[in-house]
Length: 424
Image (cartoon, helix red, strand yellow):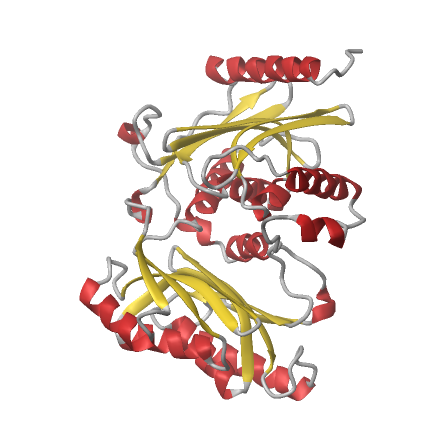
């Protein structure tokens, strides 16, 4: 359900989640990206049908309704029309350029690409088609060449025994949400291992803009209580819910809110086998994974927006200019539609520091002044110093967490009364 709302570019400012005894009631407060109330009746009906389809795990949104919307709805899925490449490994300056150049040499046309970097690791999903015949690549010989070539590129700077992966998936492999798949790839690559907590002096919740995670025990109800506080941003709830779900945790109750620049999230969870987190190592791993989930989408540096004519080798050309001018890509997303290609790149210098404005201007002129626009990244803090794990013992949950659980249930009771639900 969060994925549906996120794909519609809606901002979730507050949410109450409750499920027990086979029933659920989830409340989401949403606005558009500008903070305005959603008033488009067609969009409201679309949301209702999309959430219903999510619950039924079937059906589909009528094309007639989609055509009436004032905005384009493009769910972010791993392509079922093209061949998809999934790559994970050690990040280095120029890697995306080398990958796209290798694909161009093999006459593969990149139709879409998304890449994330975090803690010296990289994960990317690239959609390609046959640059000569069009459509997905079906020839086994060419698929083997692509796999071997990309494997050589990724291996070039890897140490012996270091993890890396290059995987090609066919159109019949099914539909997986691209951004959720990137979370899964990063998690499988263990990018969270370097997410360490700060010392005792940083365990401040009020006035601190770092990411704080506490995990406590609520023995009375058999839950583990996860509290997360961090800078607010778009898609934050999606990212944390992905992390919990992919780690096989079930959310029974939750309260999410944002105020100013900060967001607070509280989850009452159990493992899928019905147990709470029993060991300190489990709690520490979950805390590190949640910090990683909040960090992966955060990018320092300059944001460059690309809009130009689509052509064979475009990604190779653009990223080559970045590499030759000493710029490193921290995050990237590019897609094509008809004759146009649009995308965004977050770039730094080779050391990870802010790029020199003169260098960026030279790059912009070489690619095409009207094709590349420069924006300052809204993130003003270094990702390396934005994490804090507040470790607690496995004892009973503190009064703060107990109080918030009571608040959550009372809030949900009031919502149910307002919605006209009957109490049993």
